[in-house]
Each structure stands twice: as C-alpha cells, then as structure tokens.
Image (cartoon, helix red, strand yellow):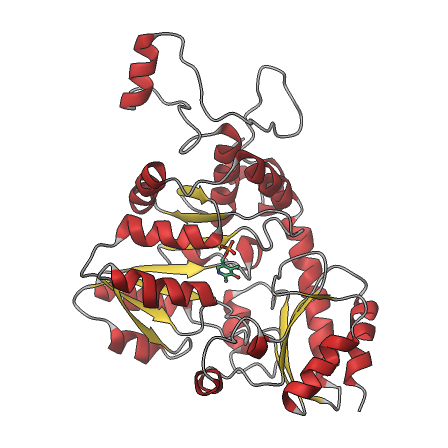
Length: 391
Ligand SMILES: *Cc1c(COP(=O)(O)O)cnc(C)c1O
C-alpha cells in the first residue's frame, strides 16, 4: 500500500502485510528458525547480501519484519530493528553506535534498569554517562563533552511525568555532533513522534502499550537507515532478537493502539481531575492537567497527557500503603501500559534500591503512588482508589 495515502490509524491496521501463497487475511506467524535455499548459488547470493531474503531467524523472520515495517511507518522512521525487550533495544543502541571512550548525556529521570545499564554496566566497558535534570536544557548543554556521542531521554518520565523538550535537546545534540535518542514508551507514536521533533532515534519497550495486554516482552529501535544499520549489525551478531511469536502479538497490538491510547488518556485525565479534588491527595502529576509545570510544552509535543498518573497522598508511606491495600480490583504490580489498571508505590518497589536522599532529590516522596490507568470503567477505578483515600 502507498503509505503517504493513508492516515496513522489505517497504517496501524494494514501496514507491513505481505501475504503468503495462501492469501491469509490476518498476519501469518512464521515459527521457523531457519529458511531453505533452492540451490548452492541461491544460498551464496542470500548470504553475500546480493539477493534479499530470509536466512536465519536471529536476524530475519517475515513476522518480525512485518512488525518492524508497521512500527516504522507509525513513527515516521526509515528503518526499525525489533529486539527481545525494551532493555535490549537500549543495549543494542549503545553497543551498535558507541565505543569505549565515548560519553553519554542522559536524563536522571530514566527507567531504573536504563540508569543501571548506563551508570554501571556500560561504565565497565569505558562508556561514561553524565546524568542531568530532565527539564533543564542548560544543564544538558553544559554536560556535553568533546567525546559525547549520545543524548538519551525518556518523556514523560516515570513516575513524575516530567517532560523534556525534544526539539531543544535535538539542537543541543546537533551542535555537539551527537545523536538524540528518545524512549517513547509512555506516549507511543499515536501521541508523540520524536523523529518529527528532531530526535535521531526512537526506542520502545513494546512490552507496555504496543502489546497493551501484558503478555510478552519486546522492544524496538527506529531512525534513519544509516543510524539503524550498525544497531542491526549488533543484533545480527549478538542475538537479542524479537521472537516471531512476540512480533505477531505486537502486530495485533498495533491494530488497536490508537483506540487504546485515546481511551487510556481519556480515563487518565478524568482520574487526574478527580484526584485533584480529593482532600487526602497532596498533589497530582499528569501532563494533561493545567497544574502540570510543563503543561504548555506537553500540549505542544504530545497529542494527549497519556495513560500514567502519579499522585502524592498526605501522610507518607502509611497513607500510601493504605490506598494500595484497600484496592479490590486494581492490580498491585510494577508493570504499566495494560488494559488492566496497575498501582505502584515507587519508594518501596521500583525505586527502593536508591537511598532516601536520592529519592528525595528525584522528587519521589514516601506518599507517592503511580497509576497505569487501564480500560476498566473509570467509575470503578475511582471507586477502588476512593476506599483507601477516606480520611
Ligand atoms: C519497561 C520500560 C523499559 C524496559 O523495557 P523491557 O521491555 O521491560 O525490557 C524501558 N523504558 C521504559 C520507559 C519502560 O517503561
């Protein structure tokens, strides 16, 4: 299909389909680890890259290719590499594009495992990272060194939903001769397209909204072909590959993504407005609220506020745990981006390994709760939280 003729919602349903000889309507799932050749000469041509085609599923599988093409169209990217998880997407980016002696400037407000990957593991291989404030562009610019190769951000951040200015950071990256990578997990291309705003790379944990129903792990890296090629070479060699089965799940997930993101966003906004009215709630963090410090930037950069709401309960940890323990329906889990609403107390779970001082510096109070707003009736979600919010 000619991609420029269709809108995003249509492409999410139909892009990337290549039917087999059976003319199946729904996308085929190719569970095969290798592919056969008609002759010695054909095998040789395939391996040398002379003729395109599948060889071995560590680096090519038609179901994975279909997912890569569909997601690339949605992000407006020339090229996409699917990976086994969101973390392996980030690992493949760094291993593909950086070398010992290179430097990363990264937001401090990142997914916890990304902070560990940059701060501890990559450091052992001679790649240093400077962590800066998510929202302070001046600090990003000041942290750039002659050997800076990558700027890395995630917006909105987890759990406080801080927004970074993608267009401004892309200017900093350009001046530094570095690449800007944006983890677009929270917004998905339905709500935010970082490449349009000047980013060089988009990273996904497909595990979250792209699946949307909490079934499988996966990730992706997208960008211009020349930037993605070395990431693909790393994947082809080292093998943190997306399984065909998971790619098939994600293909079906993408078909309902725009409907789900709209519904998640609508309920999240309603929940955030309701929480602001609750006397036991100190503060609500949601980019779609006029009270959000970067409401204007969020409005400019994202289509909606997204599906994640955080709020600070009066009375610290005990009060927050009371809300968690009073729920009867909402899932107490660290995951998010699911049809089922999830509730997390970051200070004692996702952020328990950092010191109380570091937590305070990051703005993660003992009374903070994070809701991944699901697709249940909003009244039922409110009712479940209201029980623990009674004075
Ligand atoms: C979950 C998550 C990741 C890691 O993805 P996995 O699929 O769990 O490896 C990276 N970034 C963000 C923002 C996430 O929420």
